[in-house]
Length: 99
Image: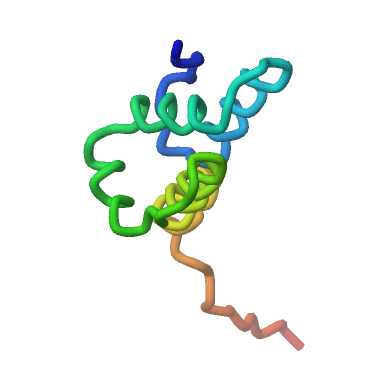
């Protein structure tokens, strides 16, 4: 069984998964091949962090379960991550206008 191409891992998980889906769109790849390809592309730390979240599923459903586990644990986009770093502006300023 040959393992299909997977784009290099990115911490922007939603975008990375979208690139994978696009790369495989017109191919005849089984769900088990998809699962194996993504597992091999994951960084060790990412795999370790989702191991407990991986459900025990049939081979036909393992790929979707893997995607759900990765997204649940690491599913923020780069933009969402940046927004979390920028403190929200909650202070309002009142300016007195001259009479």
